[in-house]
Length: 272
Image 1 (cartoon, rainbow, N blue to C red):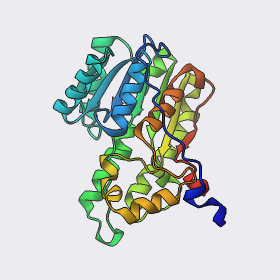
Image 2 (cartoon, one colour):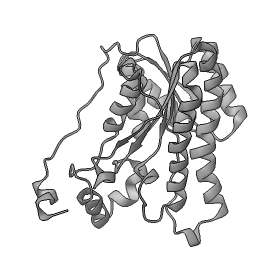
Image 3 (tube, rainbow, N blue to C red):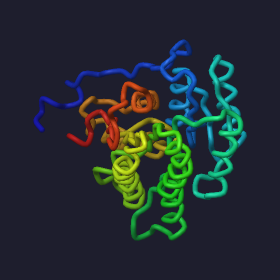
Image 4 (cartoon, helix red, strand yellow):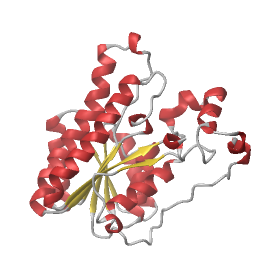
């Protein structure tokens, strides 16, 4: 690419918060965020609640979900926590039924829940493979289908799935993970074509290298952390708020003519 694009000569842009409790972009809307209690999911929950939505944080760890919801409520935002195992149909159905019972509507679904297993393909176990596909792909399908049935009846709704740059480029020790996220990306495009006639928009956000607990193994290795920085044209790792800003745009009316799109929020990584 040429020496003129070394990290030392790139502009060091900074993430900025999109959160504002005074915002009304999503006022009156109800949003479910799976895996919304930490990392990118928590940033998304905070952004949607900050834009005026009633956010339901849905994840397996009920105590963690309630702590996250309590923190948002303490900041003057509207948030609740409910349990769900996205890989199990009865659990997803119970979540949706309870949200509708409490709040009478679902306008937004963010399929953020996901797992990442780093392992060489020759050493990958059946259990690891099945867990990745169960949460990342089956979970996205089940939540989309069950919430989507309600959205189709209302003839409106916005779904955002979380993919990754691994849907487009190869990541070391990530064959299974990349495969699941590629499936999520293509599922997004196909579902958007199918449900557009009902006024239901389906998009995906594909993060690049983002500093969260899930990236801890790479972040704590100086060489690997530097490699990811050097491979990113903007010259830095992303922050959860960068991803949340993209999700907020896609679920808002500002994106009313956007569907079937996979938005890579990766500092330019896949174009490098």
